[in-house]
Length: 443
Ligand SMILES: *Cc1c(COP(=O)(O)O)cnc(C)c1O
Ligand SMILES: [Zn+2]
Image 1 (cartoon, rainbow, N blue to C red):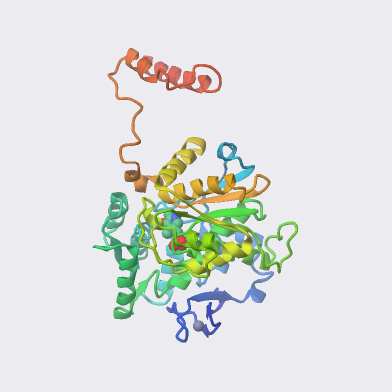
Image 2: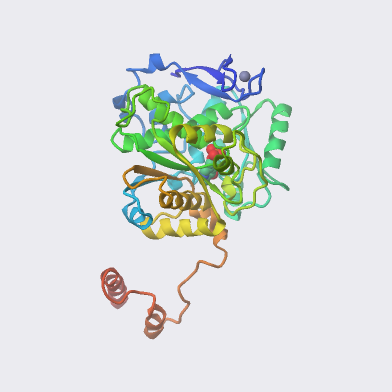
């Protein structure tokens, strides 16, 4: 069953029935799902959640849908990885990476789309549509296929090839628009009034879509043994994900599923978890507003390799700013070169290959650690939200084989000379690997 009471305007507080609406008819403020927390208290329990499926639907009672037979490809329950090597490199203590590269279509968008299309189907929609920076496109096309719905997906025409291909293969309609995401989004808003019988994931069903990101908070708390982290870092595109991670942690405290951190009580506005945001320099309107202390987010024209985060006019930018300020976090931004270095750093320390958005998060994490905003006495979680296989072009020809050689022993020796440490830490594993190869070839 659903515990949702209403959609409530975030600006004026007017309430609406939980249908396909996203903006207040009076003030145009965004609508947000509000729940009957009193009815949930004591009924939504750790035990009930633990008995649920190993995907986001274990938290169905905390989501704005009925949840019978959800539209699901199994999003969620991704690994929370203790990242000690990365922590040492950037000077932190207890650091965890939430590895959302491992979702069905390779990004956290599977969480939000699964919720949005479940609600869309409950409301009787037959067509799923969206404007996308790439990952949403993949996920909508895939989940629509799963649900037996048609899909209409609009993307900027300059997206990474992998994101275009992995959307097209699902057989929906895919329209590449000559323009940037903000142009595509504007077009989608017009389409939404022209085609009211389509479920636009990020327009008329946006309040449901956005709630899916709360599962990023629920899972982290459950994976930490029903404890809160001190500080999390999340990337910002529209700002919805970061805002809902905070909402998720607040709900857990409110429902008594986790205790507030030491020194806080359940009512403390400064919490429950410090939330910091990450953007690319080439599209950093929320980081700029944070840095200047502005109380509104001024739109920008994006130019960055982090295309999944390239929203110049972020719908929830102001709310993200509010969360970060309230919880005592910060918002940093990083250059394209730092993004690539962030991807490499995570890959070589933890074996996780992130897309450019993950590079933004890791590079910003390192920067905020250097600045002392994120401290080494904090339990920190970094959200890595997309898979590196989708953005390989970002590396151009800067990543490739160490050398290309003839199949001869002396070529190997010559190629490895100077690339490996001759004594100490790496000798063991490297010698082992080489020996293993030799043995296989001999047998
Ligand atoms: C869409 C996206 C985000 C950010 O989402 P918002 O909720 O719009 O801020 C982060 N990471 C990846 C990989 C994405 O595709
Ligand atoms: Zn309103």
